[in-house]
Amino acid sequence: MRRGGGLLRQRNFRLLWIGETISQLGNAMAVVGVPLVAVIVLHASTFTIGVLTAAAWLPWLVIGLPAGAWVDRLPARRVMIVCDVVSALLYASVPVTAWAGVLTTGLVIGVQLGGGAASVLFMTAYQVYLPSLVTPGELIEGNTKMQGSASAALFAGPGLAGLVAQLLGAVTALLCNAVSFLVSAVCLLGARPRAAAPPAAPRETTLRREIGDGLLLVLRDPFLRQLSVFWAVANLALTGYTALVVVFLVRVIGLSPGAVGLLAAIPGVGGILGAAATGRITARFGTARGLLLSTLAGVPFALLIPLTGSGPRLAFYVAGALLTFAGVAVGNIIIAAFRQSYSPPGMCGRVTATMRFLIFGTSPLGALLGGALGSWLGVRDALWILLGAAALSGTLLLSRALRGRRDLPDAAPEPRERVLRERASR
Image (tube, rainbow, N blue to C red):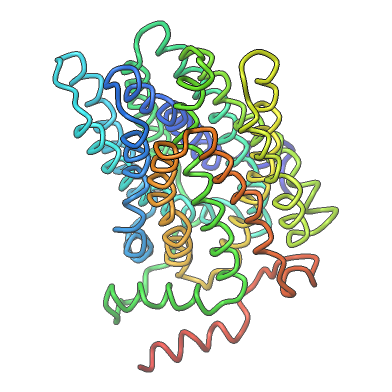
């Protein structure tokens, strides 16, 4: 019988939760810190800032697919620790080179590329590692707590980055990011799976074959395919928005770094509210209907953001970001728990990486599109286009398969196993 207090009473989950929360805090600081360095220190153009954002997501296109096969072959915890250490060194290089007077846009792009590659492996390994710490029945609770803490970090990180940038300079905020990755690594060193993983079966296939199995599985499965297409479109639009939001708040609205940090924290508040509500939403409506409700009722509020102006009109940004990212958080939790329970044994890494390759692979295009539209049409008009696309993305979920059921399936159906057998026989 489980003790009161839920998963946070379990030492191993608690260490993962603390380490990931602190690491997410650093990442959230970087989301505002890197554009602030580009705008304030390097005086970068709108399109260049889009390129910087794209660089962080480009590794999903380059190593997104093999990352799943690598993680399925390697100890997930070890992969996560190495990624934390590499990320710490990369982000620490920005303030060091700035203080030495040799910081360039090219170096920041390189840091974004390297940090993005480490993030690909870390995020894939984390999705594989979490089920080793909890039971299948605890996946919703585990993902809810992880999403809630990530949202709390998203709330605190931008404000902290803005405050540090206001008081100590923009590059110093990235030093805090580097420290957060080291703390995450220390926490992961102390965590252990609840049971030893069974010995891996001998690998009789090549890496390319295993990547193909994961890709084939996602593309042929109606649920995995539809969820991937939906999030790919939504992610393209929201990444374009992310590439422009600091430029919008600084150059169009005329806010200080501290105020930008506070407003950039609003999506995190929405994420906290969404994570807190997920359990009740899924209990009342089911996971399939809860996913439809959160995306169709929450994300369209993004259309309030382009109405933002100075003074009282800042309320449009607050309301739009709050409600939009509350819906996004609920959808993220439901999809993550579904993917972890639905994936066949030994394929969670490949399913995760394949879906994220398809989803986050649109991020570089979204960031470049945001930068291009902002340069061509102006930042505010570009936001109307991007956030309009995000608002409409939920309609991609209105298929008979989802509309006709209360819950998403929680086990792999037999036809999916046939796909793998057919693939293996070729």
